[in-house]
Length: 395
Image 1: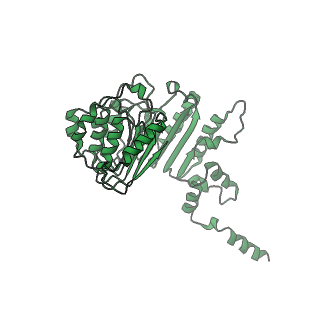
Image 2: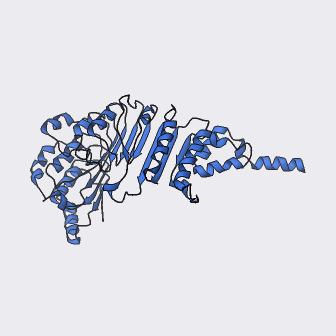
C-alpha cells in the first residue's frame, strides 16, 4: 500500500518532472511574488525561480507589505529586487520595473541598474518611474538615467517612462535595438537624433507625451530629421511636443516616399494652426505603404487660435497621394471644422482598401453639428475609393 501511495503521489505531481526550462517559463507567467513562493513547495522547487529569464517588479508587488517605522513599502520594494538579483543565477532576458514613488530611492535604483549593466543577456528592458506629483506635469519628477545604463548593448526592446536622457561620451549605440518607446521623456533634439542614428535596425519608435523641462521644451526635431534616421521603421508614434509641426518646400521634396517600410502611423496635430493640415498630409505622403493611420487632433481649439482655411486651397497639390494599402483610419477629438472634414474626405477618396474609418468626436461638437457632419459623410456626391468602408462615429 505504501509503495502504491508513492506511485500515485508521483503521478499526481506531473509538473515537477517537466524540464527545468519549461518550469522556468511557467514561473515567468506568474506574478513574481507567487513565483518566489514556490520555493517552499519542496527541496526540488527551492531553486527553480532563480533561473527565471523574465523578472517583473511593479506596484502589485507592494500590495500586502506592512508599513513599518524604519522600513517603508518602497524600501521593501527595492530591497526585494536586490534580494532576487543577488540570488538569481541564470540569464535575465527581460527586466521590468514600474514604481510610483518620489526621488528618495533614486540611489537604490541607480544601484539596481549598475548591477544589471554588467549583464550581456538582457533583451528587453522596461522602466516606468511614476511620480506622486504626476497630476500636474509642471511638477512631475523624472528619473535621470545613469551613464552605466547605456552599456546594455544587447537590448532589442526598450521602454522608458518619465526619464531624463543624457548620453555619455562613450555611447556606442544600441545596434540590436528593434523597438524604442519613450513616454514623457526629457530629451534634447540633438540627443534624440544621436540615439536614432545609433539604432540602425529600429522597426518601432514611439515618442509620446510632453516635456516639462524649460531647457528642452522649445528644442524639437523636424519630421525630416526624424525620418532620415528611421530607414527601417514600421511603426511610428510621435507627439507634437517633440516634433516641429512645419514642413518646408525643401523638406517636402526630401520626404517623398522616405518611409517606405512604415505600416502604422500615429501622431497628434492641430489643423487650426497654420501649416497643420499641410504638415499632416506631407507626413502621410512620405509613407506610401501605410496600413493604419491614427491622428489625435487638438483638444482645445481656442488655444490654437482662430480657425484657418489657408491650407484648404492647397489640397489639390496632394491629388497624387498614394494610400493603396490603407485599411484603417482613426481620428480622435474631431471637431468638424472645415480643415478636418477636408482631410477626412481626401484620405477616404485615396484609400481603395479602406475597411474602417473611426471618428471620435470632440466634446465641443453639438448634436446639430454631428447631424450636419453625418449628412456630409453620407451624401452620394462624396467620393470614396472604397465602397465597403465602415464609417463609425463615436462621442
